[in-house]
Amino acid sequence: MSRCPTRIALERYAAALIEDDETRAIAAHIEACAACARAVAALPASVALVGELQQLERSRAVSAGVVDALRTATAASTTGFLRGASGSRGDTEARSLD
Image (cartoon, rainbow, N blue to C red; front, side):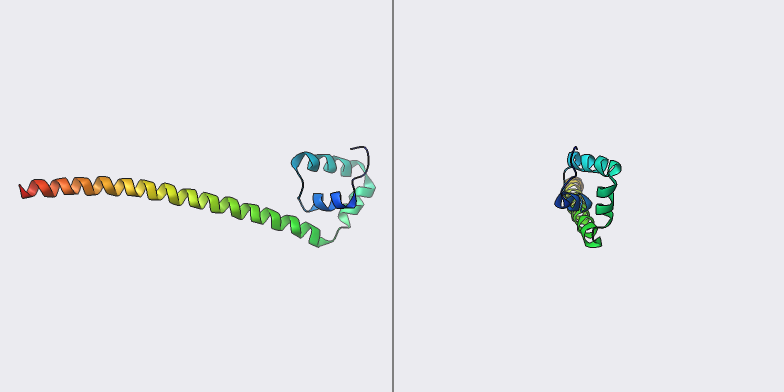
């Protein structure tokens, strides 16, 4: 990155609202540029909180997806198990009636 990023870009960086490639470029720039490092450090705490909230929302979405997948898998395996169990019980009952 040849020029300093804009304040908006630094805010988006601090809030984790940019893509990985841009994040790496800005992080590398901040390591080499004391003015930008100070600017990021001086950003209000609310900017960092926005990033943390974004990450929390992503985590919740991932967690909800995992829970849904587990429920679906559990329901499918339980249904199959119950079908097999009831089928064999039914056969036993039918044989005992003969």
